[in-house]
Amino acid sequence: MAEKQRRCGFIALVGAPNTGKSTLTNALVGSKVSIVSRKVQTTRALMRGIAMHGDAQLVFMDTPGIFSPRRRLDRAMVTTAWGGAHDADIVVLLIDAKRGIDENAEAILEKLSELKQSKVLVLNKIDLVDKSALLSMVQRVNAKAKFDATFMVSALTGDGVEALKPWLAEHSPAGPWHYPEDQISDAPMRSLAAEITREKLFDRLHQELPYHATVETDVWKELRDGSARIEQTIYVERESQRKIVLGKGGTTIKAVGAEARKEIAELIEQKVHLFLFVKVRAGWGDDPERYRSMGLEFPPE
Image 1 (cartoon, rainbow, N blue to C red):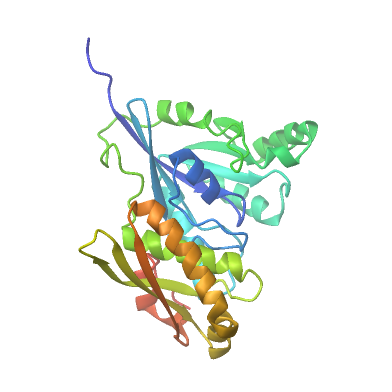
Image 2 (image 1 turned 180 degrees about the vertical axis):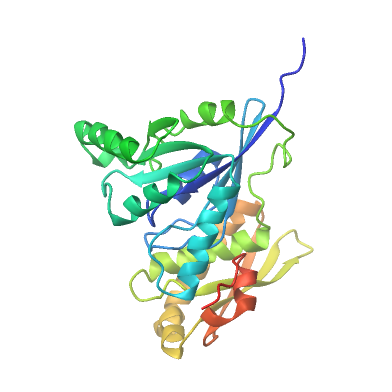
């Protein structure tokens, strides 16, 4: 019996900020590969999560949320999101069913009609909305842009998520796999570890901290006892922000470190010694090198 032909599909998940793209990526992959936060615009560069379905390898590109950019960093993230959509084999639009078709969704739908790739509509957070309202929303969205398929899911609970994979696998182009079968992300561990710490930072300081605080992994040393020593620096733009991150008597940074260390240890399946430092890097939002380190293009003024 002849072996079935392999397929490999690059799938861009696009949508407005906080529609659940990162949560859905993690649910589809079955493991944590993308930062999840209540704070808008926490995904900055393209994070790729990899899943298998039969003979198909599905490479999910979790893109930054698309909105009307005001600052340079905003523009870089939105450009990256649309770049991911243009490069993909299939584009999945996520709409927050509770929020409905707001101004951001309208703008995305208008631009989405220009793309020639297969397009899939995913209504997320369906557990929070009445069924009749969902059907009405599907009709309205499909009237604005042509979708090849529509799915209704709750990325948080996992409801409906598994139904997506067979469709995506079937519609992925024939071709060799791009990654080993057991790989779940193309991001290096240093980057994933930094993203985990950034997520814990935002979880704890949701209101107080600007979203463009950043984390970099400076040292990753494998120790003789099988554990890892990891040193990371949290960069903020002002001294007042540094004090917020440290907290009174260092309580905030200790709590962030404890939560991040636990999750990093689970990810790499070894004991972790995590050391966090907080530094002020004024004006990094205008530094091209910082953008490159985050996998973003530095946009001109």
